[in-house]
Image (cartoon, rainbow, N blue to C red):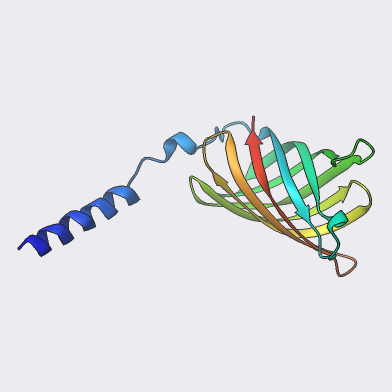
Length: 158
């Protein structure tokens, strides 16, 4: 009897957790213009440590919703490396899919110029911790050579 009661209570807790209110994580989707900032560590496929560096992007973007959970977007802005001489720009365009109110995945074509120019095809994801703070991960393959990059970091939405 006690065992069946514990199982019933545990299963109701699982259903309650799945039905949680995630609306506090939703970003205003009425405005297609947005500003977001991203700081992360860019890890290249080269083996020496000098190719791993911090990256800071501040992008202004426009998103066009195709359906409730799918959007096309384009964004651009400055790209800043760890040293004062490492500054450039980035521009990207892609598709974003919202799996849940807190989890987005997508793909994009990105032109990133910091210390050298790179054209990347990227898969990306972001997990919203709060409406303004996200944990992000990007994996990019170079369109013209064998370089690949993994970027892990934190995103800020304004």
